[in-house]
Image (cartoon, rainbow, N blue to C red):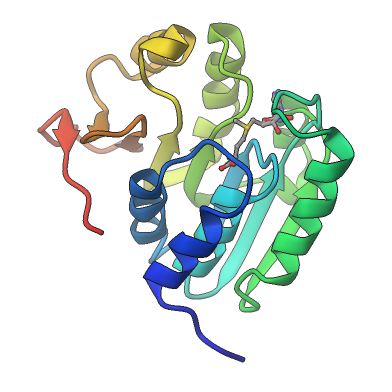
Length: 197
Ligand SMILES: C[S@@+](CC[C@H](N)C(=O)[O-])C[C@H]1O[C@@H](n2cnc3c(N)ncnc32)[C@H](O)[C@@H]1O
């Protein structure tokens, strides 16, 4: 089986319908390199899922989407696209796709932590982001990386929820909408940080 380079993974990913930018995917790819258990809330067509699987060496991803149809493509198309993406994901990473709300999924036996990393990209309203973070935070290992998407003025609910939980103890990738924090360890300055690639 052909091993894809990081650049190939990111270029393929950008062909999958979705809103995450190349720069954000680049950060995600690097951020999960050491991760053995990763959880994703909000799969849509599988863009970030594809990148996370190839960024990891091996392990497991729990991928959750309630298929409430928040995107521009029809729900059935998003389901089919996700299945196609999973067929082209990293074969060393076992992906469990769960069609349920994030909060309900977090209570399932197969979704129990500890997770090394999490990517929160479901509903972007304040209440949902808050409940997503609060549901998955206890499932993270100490030192694990919690990330999320759409931290920008177009989604004030995301910003408010992140601030409510973490205060200033979180970073945003420069020129992106990606927030991240290491769980249970002192905050590392700067607020805005760099990304390679
Ligand atoms: C912004 S899209 C995810 C984009 C994806 N991460 C990517 O890189 O393309 C948000 C997705 O979250 C799902 N969603 C919304 N609310 C949810 C919830 N409470 N639980 C699980 N999934 C949810 C929607 O069905 C939608 O597919």
